[in-house]
Image (cartoon, rainbow over all chains, first blue to last red; front, side):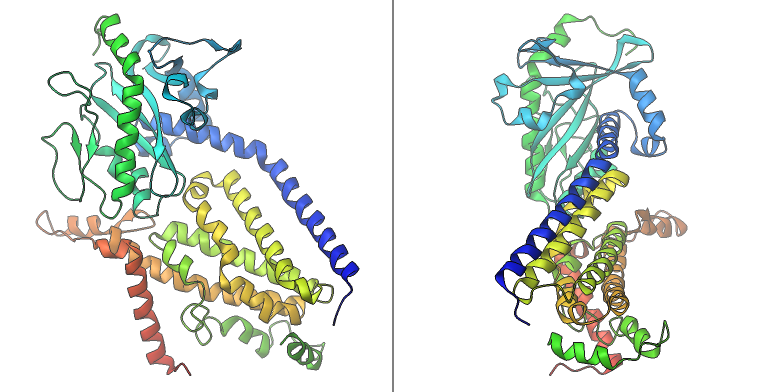
Length: 255
Length: 227
């Protein structure tokens, strides 16, 4: 059966409109739910840097929100480590800063959120400082949250996420088994230089005696390189803030 | 081709049972005898990509079932209206919309899965099985039969990728659905007993090997020979 051009065009237009309406309608309806899921996911990632993953996955959504409210406070700093309250006349809060968007700017112009994990009700009694990190893996962007203890050198914990790394290979950076490897590692060497922590090539070796190395990901060397670069970059960016914190405040009493 | 199937459709009686022999065959044929992956060798790319772990594979399988059934249904409903010259684009638009729907729903209700699978869910669009069934079946058959056909093909696809994922996760990561199996077995036999995981299984090569073995076993049993 051969249809006229007018019929084909009319059919295509109607189909496009119907499908377009269907999709935009669904997107509109689901948007608030998606936004909530996204925010919750970010909170989970931030908390994941200072808490075991099993503990978080056992918590309900409301519990996570409440816990986050009670235990996390946040700041925004620039590359010098100075606290920023507003930019271009608009107030800035760490939670609303899009790290991905800032990543596209020059490091000097970026805003750097800092999340402080503190005792309940006592914002000054910090237990750990959580810094968002961002970079690129093999296929797409990768990001994460790095928690440092109050000495600003020892890693308390770390979480990674990714947009499109290969499942089972690069995507393993999201598994707690891989993230555990960073625990208690140190980002400064004996001479006080910032050396970060570097994921090695190959997998299965024991790096427990070496404070700046962690076991690699077999089959995901490029993702691991991306992780290394990301950590190194952002630690440099946060150096200003870390140095300030180190000299400024007296040693935390409870630590 | 579509005219040929259309004639066959007319020959079928209206009073056919809901699950007549012919209709049952629509579902059971793609499971083994005419399996989209092992016999027609379609949809291999996603079979390799998602099958490192059971859980994402299961979500992928369910998504494909949903997309295929709905796409077959919509195309079959529209089959007399779709202009033949733009039918491929129409099929693509319908499939792409359905896939986007799945992606949006996953993002809202299963955010973790969405993060893990979003790339691959998008790739359902290019899965040859979906377009293949639309072109070969839904364009020329009634909606109910098309639903059965889509469901059967999607099931055939699903059980294969789930089987591949089963072995790949078990041998590659020593777990199933994220539950450590190898560690459990090791602990039964004391500390000295360790089961090693096979890194090859985690890489796409592992999927090829498992798939190849599956096809071998299947063809030995059914005696199927490619002509």
